Each structure stands twice: as structure tokens, then as C-alpha cells.
Amino acid sequence: MMSKRGQLVIYSGPSGVGKGTLLAPLLGPDSGLVLSVSATTRSPREGEIDGVHYHFISRESFEQMIADGEMLEYTQYNGNYYGTPKRFVEQQRDAGFDVILEIEVDGAMQVSKLCPDALMIFIMPPSFGELRRRLVDRGTETPAQREGRLTAAVREIACAPRYDFVIVNDELSTARQQLLSAISAGRTLPRFQQNKIEEVLKDAQTSHD
Ligand code: 5GP
Image 1 (cartoon, rainbow, N blue to C red):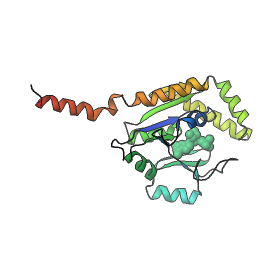
Image 2 (cartoon, rainbow, N blue to C red; image 1 turned 60 degrees about the vertical axis):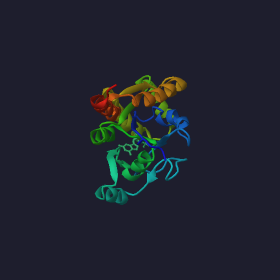
Image 3 (tube, protein in one colour; image 1 turned 180 degrees about the vertical axis):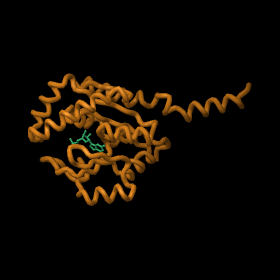
Image 4 (cartoon, helix red, strand yellow; image 1 turned 180 degrees about the horizontal axis):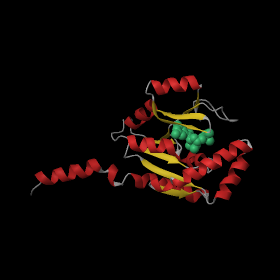
């Protein structure tokens, strides 16, 4: 059992920016980092596995979880619910793991209000044209759905200044290195060190030769 409670890492960026690809190699049994599996009412894309990529659930089940207070945050995005089940996040943090929430900006703002010490990282595309190209290449959305996601992207990118770190996902290995550095640097932000600061100041009152 690790002694320190894990930190919460909010990880956002517009659809198609490559958040999953960037993050995947950083997860793993020895990384100390786990990804929270969200619940959603959208249908699985080809290759997506229930319980791994998302918990794919019905609107009724989702609304029941909201009513039962089981969601840390939730939102509606392009006509579907997306939310973070609270229990898993708490269990993992208590066990000392850092937990990554890959969520859009509305959810991110809800979590940062509830957990002001959460670390916030935003992934930016190198340009809007490149974001559009990546979404087209991915080919998982209809043109209308894609336009919806690009409209949401503008709003999301406008929220980037509210994050602690903004990483441009141009060259993959550089962006991945920056993501690792940001997670590590996050532990040294004053708001994570509040207990340590208080502890040392308290010690100063009683310490003498
Ligand atoms: P997608 O349908 O492409 O998997 O996800 C659409 C958007 O919903 C992405 O920006 C993704 O980060 C976000 N998202 C995924 N899970 C959650 C969640 O649990 N809560 C919130 N607020 N957003 C989520």
C-alpha cells in the first residue's frame, strides 16, 4: 500500500487531437498512473470494448447514476451523456495512484471546482486545419457529427488558458515527453504542497538548537 494519496489529473483537448495516442504508452502497471474509465450513452466505435474504453450504458442507467450521486462530474456532448464514476477515482487515489480524467471542458471545470488541487492539462492541435484533417482521417464520424465536434473544438480551445499546462500535439514523442514532465511538475505546484508548507511552518515554531 502506497502512503500518499494520488493526484487527480484533468486531461482535455478537442476531439481528434490525439489524446488517447499520446497517453497510451504512459499508462501501465508500473507507471503509478491509471485512466478513469468514463460512462457514456454513445454507441461503441469499432474496436471499442465495454469496460475498457468506456462503460457503455443506457440513458436510463446514466440518469440513475446521476440521481444516486455516483458521478464525480458529467455533461452532454453532441447529444450523449459522458460522466466520471466517482467510486473508481476515489479507490485508486486512496491506493496511491494518480488518476487521469480524459474529459471535455465542462466536466473539467466541474472537477476543478470540486477538487481545486486537480492538475489541469490541455492538448492543443498544431493548427485548426490539422485538427480537421485528423478527424477526417480517423473516419469514425459522419460529416455532420464531425462539424459538431469541430464547433465544440473552438469553444474548448478558448478554455485552454484556464488549464495549468497547454501541450501542442505536433511531434508525438515531444508532446509525450512534455506530458510526462507536466504530470511530474504538477506535484510541485504550491496547491499540492499545502500540507508540506504548513508542516514545515509548524515545525519552525518548535524547532531550536
Ligand atoms: P468521444 O466520443 O470522442 O470518445 O468523446 C467525446 C468527448 O467527451 C471527448 O472530448 C472526451 O474527452 C469527452 N469525455 C469522455 N469521457 C468523459 C467524461 O466522463 N466526462 C466528460 N465531461 N467528458 C468526457
